[in-house]
Length: 442
Image (tube, rainbow, N blue to C red; front, side, top):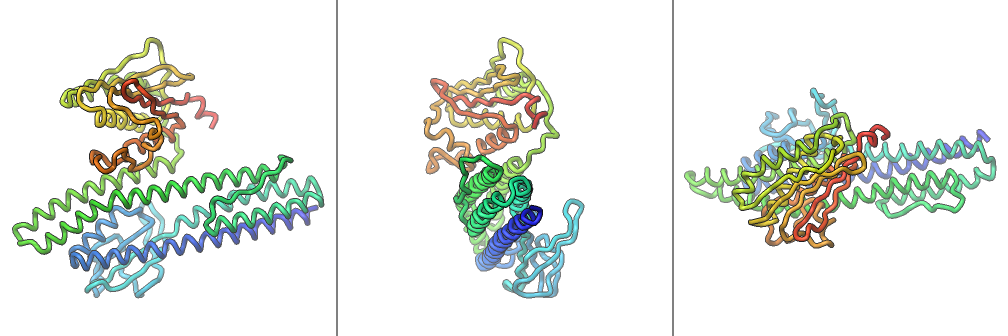
């Protein structure tokens, strides 16, 4: 039976390596396409605004792209660095590999790079294929769990079970091959026997469900980012063209407007990166108990003058009885409440009353922010938490559409529930926190 078990493990390993190679190849091609697209953008920047525009574009890309996944460099023909975060010009032209030296926070890393002449300068665009290793680790981790269960099952049930395992493994290999080919909707079948193979299939299906959700979210977010950043980038392009063509005395005015646009873009990208970091981390080392009532009272006092200037009011309704301490990252939860208050003030309109409330839940606080404004239709309440979502995108220019996305990310980080409800009139955003004991068991 050890031989049968060994054969099963080998088959699973081969299937895993095949899936890993397919996924790695697909992600490498995606990276190559992204690097090539960035190189074309550099060429467009040089054609529109000359060498100055190219240098500014590379400086902006180096500061805002997802470092250390991407790097950019601009060099003279003699190899002198002009802009970017690549210190040394490569010795090749076209596609190749460069190695970025280690820093205080990042190890040395090899990156796929494209180098070539744009105008009179050497331009280098490089990217690191970190996604391939991350996806590969996830696939190999899942397959390791599957291999362990299959080995134990093979030792326990003998030859008949081994035949069944072989059929399951072939199905698993076909499923992973399909996933590697880009089909994230395929799932493993689950039998009525509820055996160990079905357990593994459920685990893999759960992983595939999560992968499908992440990919859909990534696609939607990328589309939303591209849509929302298109207008400011177009404005920057037009302003730079005007600055190049304008008389010297008018150039400074155009460049100041470009700087304002770029600051807005930087703020938007910083918020996107912060949301991504919150969603990607499960670190609870900064979680600690604190008095939620005191935080709400301070927020009401802080926002009162602002609300008065907007002909609005804000009040904290203290609970009638004791409330358990909140457990979480105090700064994050304060940011969540600030976003809810600012959102309520922005859309409730003049004369609106905003109320902060607190009550005892299941050994943890329940917090809410209510307003007396027009509210949100029930069919749109889930959608407003999506990045860049606006109920009236044609007319609503008052925000980036990221405030409630940040709220959703912080709530998920705390495993807290966040729902929008009718306030009759107006809207109530209700946050239900978990007790400290729930995190101790995690």
